[in-house]
Image 1 (cartoon, helix red, strand yellow):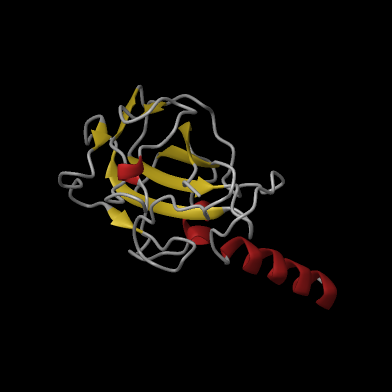
Image 2: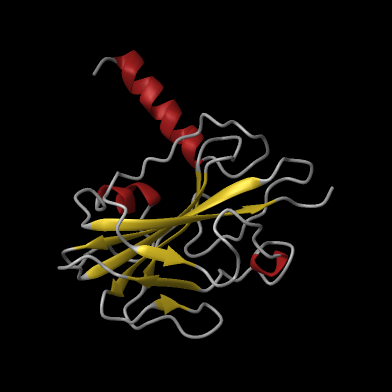
Length: 188
């Protein structure tokens, strides 16, 4: 790869990690790998495509919503959760990565309670470990927050605090995934 290509690649990566500022650039693309859409994945907190309650955002308590899943693919051993905002002005912003979720854990996570034993969290695009609640700039159009759950046929050895890129890299070859989306727009 030439110096110009390396510089361009560095600029693209830096822009993707810069944060969740304003804007609504619909060209922002997730780097999450494709996988069969074969997991029933949702939240009882809001409808797919619906508004995320303020309680789950920076304008409320900021807790992640409860999530539930069913019908994991055969052979699933570990689940990985990724939450992204593709509407951030500086590129897709990763709000949360979590793994170490055993496929035998049951059917969901209730953040208001205890996370399952073994759950590990990675860094988000703000460089902090754990969940960063939706908090688009006031005056922006509604941002879309995509929740993706991947099923893997192996346990991960990632350490807590892994980067979003490290988490994305281990998702290649996933047995399946499920996704749902919520929106949030702050009052001006």
